[in-house]
Picture 1 (tube, rainbow over the protein chains, first blue to last red):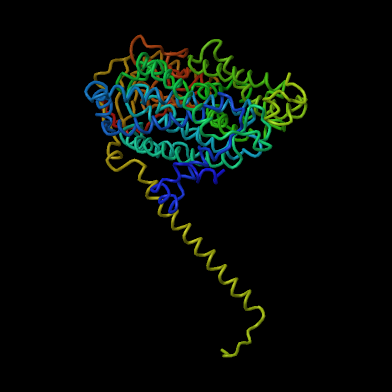
Picture 2: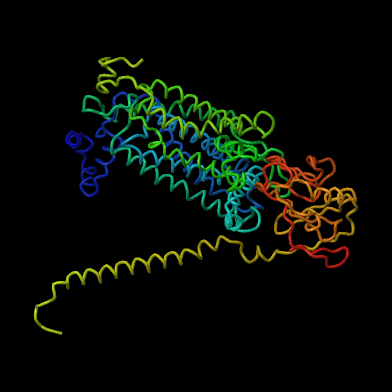
Length: 429
Length: 184
């Protein structure tokens, strides 16, 4: 295929040839996202969300760099500098709304991307490391988003920062010292704001580095596909360019259309009104809620009370608070272990009649956790939160390992080509 | 000390061992040095001298009527000072015998029983409990109530119900006169 490329008109260009001889960047691009990268020919629209997440990352970095030129990371000036961006800076409102909503859309793309991976078994051999790097990206995104939310120095910024940094006080012995170290003082204050700004600027580039590693690992074996079976030969693939570049571009058009609807017509839909009140260290808002993308994690954190059944086995060892903190971080970190928790050799849920149902229950459970996280921990929400927390861990630690052993998968098609041309040994279903 | 080429058969291995030693010791010194160099960078994140300088706060208690509370700022944190009523003191002492998640006697939490001084930061996740002002919810035990995750504190600031693991912290303080208190 590379031979074919060297003969293309573009590669015959004198300047291109001069650069290519000294640094083969054009063939590198061609092998990464061009005609030199063979992709399974049955990739569905669920495979668009990786490139959409990449687009969101670029939107966030570009809008963020410009915002940083107008923002002042000081407790007395931060809120006003954000309001100045909104009112006085040319187009500042647009750039800030792009950045605010961009965070939500980044998470939407990434969450769908993750659930896609879960449904089609994209994390299984030989793509375990690819998956683990993805979990690291999710963690880095969460840290970045959390610190970014603190910068406008509104009430939710301040109290969100207080609650989340206080999580670390649950660490035995050194908890308080860690929290003081994170704050640079005895409360969330100017030193905290300064370092969060510094890290909020740094972490997106760490994410970018992880994304490059993610794509590097992806290209080692190529994309998984809806059938979950391996590429057997050239008849199973088509070149990434132009077939999937155009499909990704189409997806980006749809994504940007929805994104722009929120930016222009409902820019504060994903936000909290309380964050337009300047931070007041002496008054806690009556109801602290994190941004929507943290709600499932927040629900797991709050599920751990002294009365929670999952807490009983460890109640002699630690406080309910520490158990909640461990469970919250554990709920994300456990994702990295899914390649080993899922014992089934069959990748795609298309051929896993029981897993298919458990997958959707898991999605539902995650949505319910999000709803629980949005409500004050009162009445029925407490019990719903605890049940859905139990199910979350049961899915990962019990259902996935057992299902792989007891489930009888459907017959797999001979090849990707056979599955899309109808020549399957046995139809799926 | 010989100029001949006759070297003992083990010489080559000796050479390797010495190289290994040099390699390991160089790497070790490098790693320890790097770790030590990192420490000032991490330590720079700890509270700076000017932050630490704001370590004490003095408060005049004379204007606080019985049954009234005020909130003062100490090290950036709110400190609750409550002039407790006779009934509250009696209730707090009576509850010494109740089932307390973080057992503490009321007498050990105050210097003078009528003055309850404590850091107004919920020990769960750092919110500020309600109950300082008239009309704010005081929780099921007549003290303070944290709206974030529903912790109830009693009239001695002890945790009674909810997720908070500890009682509200009593800071180091002293009475510099009958009506003057120095926190910190």
